[in-house]
Length: 321
Ligand code: ZN
Image (cartoon, rainbow, N blue to C red; front, side, top):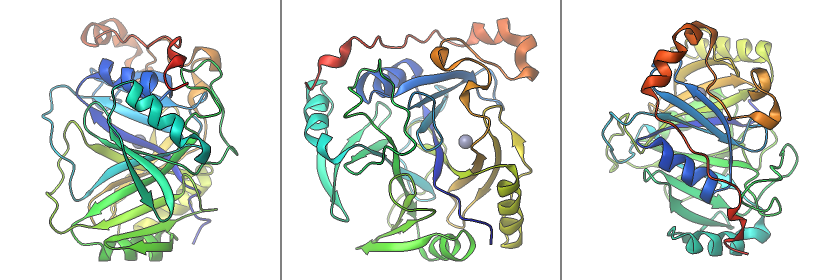
């Protein structure tokens, strides 16, 4: 088996309102708006990205702006919770910040670690988990949240399954994840070095509705490949294990393969290279519409269909201090 995937690369979800989405992820959670582009398969719709200063792999939360889709509750065969890592000392800061901004949040404990549970504008469930690493994090000094409290990366994703057996077997036998805990119907696994951004929880939830592709749901989770060779090695292993895996697809900011785990959740493995500075310098990330070469000729036409996005100014650092 190749070296384990080191952790989460990005998580992609579906929003029904791009502006309210930007207001939430920048204005409330304090992530940086790092890329404004289109869905490479549906180019008259937005694909927008948030992350740390550079969108370091493991920090990139991304959205397809698909207002034409209905809203549906998340369900089995989907990622139902996206958890972010914040410093343990920052839980009170976040609790105050969220209530100050009118965002409801409840406290939870997951395997002994404190978390705040909340919903984004589209009712996607988010957690802020009080355990973080600064190792790969690139702070955004001008962000609305003081870097001492800012989100560092993802912490985990939670997969909801009608039955967890096949998924657990796949994660451990085929993808090299190791079990690190269980609590009721929740089983926790880690990959790579473990810890924040390497964790996946699997929920055995036979009563959950079957998830559909809709506004308010997570579309897929991408795991990191260290480089192209690592990705190809994983592709071979996955094909051998019976997964139906796409060829490598050029996504401009990374290269990707896609497949479904046995419970139906769409997985991607994306390369760490080349990253989000491939088409605009770090200081300008997210400031203008970026298109892949195949759509450059349609720029004016595409722009006509894409509503303007106003990124909140960063003067709102006051809340929660
Ligand atoms: Zn993706």
